[in-house]
Image 1 (cartoon, rainbow, N blue to C red):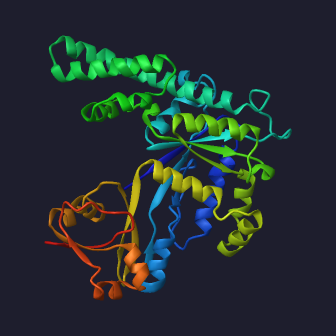
Image 2: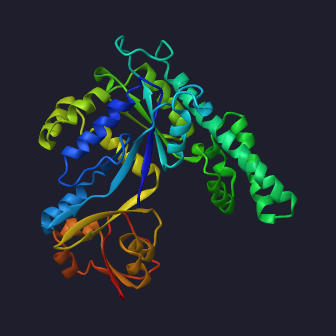
Length: 366
């Protein structure tokens, strides 16, 4: 399952520093081929201690983590929806992502000039949100014009889409994000709404970039953004781009020591990756054998047959049963073999809902 998270923010908020730290850290800290697809796209590992514990016990020939793509969306300035900066190009990049990591400047530094002359995170957030909303209004307006013509020709499906689109358009006109309408929609309408491909339907995480002194307790600016995030029921994390950049060139052991000296257990980038994974409602299951131990990403609520399809379509088509051991049972008994001998291996059918951490072996007809 290919996942993309777009990194957005005004110039000089630390976007590039964080993106570069993300790609460097993941390139050096794992023994797998790392690639940058494009100058502004990086493939990074989703950190998961369970995968490496499985590998430590099983000792396979290869270990394959699950990945996310982070896209550095440059050029977002006031007027981006009109093509200012590199607006049109990068707004199209955001449409291709599944989620948005919104970098918010919560630090003061006289050597890094703020585009508006002073640090004001709430104002910065509003500028970015307004640009995304205006881009959505323009896109939706074009779609509605086409739908209206079909609706007038007694196309029932087009009429249904047109009416829903008008409701969303009215919300956007009030400078509200499209996803704010979701609680009001029926399941069928939610499915239809996604077909408008609007940017502000995407889940968003606020990444509060602070100085070294504000990493633990935050500051006056982080308090403002956290209060906003809580009202919006939006995820947020606090990190220091400068520290993340320093961590990115260290070995795993050195990173661990550095984090301990700072009084934190996890790097900000790990928190950012995991929060992005969480807000997309994703879980991980594993396949494990002598040849390979591998992590796979699926949506929460995916059944065994569809999970098998993530590995190969032929496995899904010929699905018979899934042999399942929970990670908790693997950890409790110390090995897959001992978990089986203790009766913890279950045979599940195609409708079984795969759980986070399940270790699966799929039986199928070739």
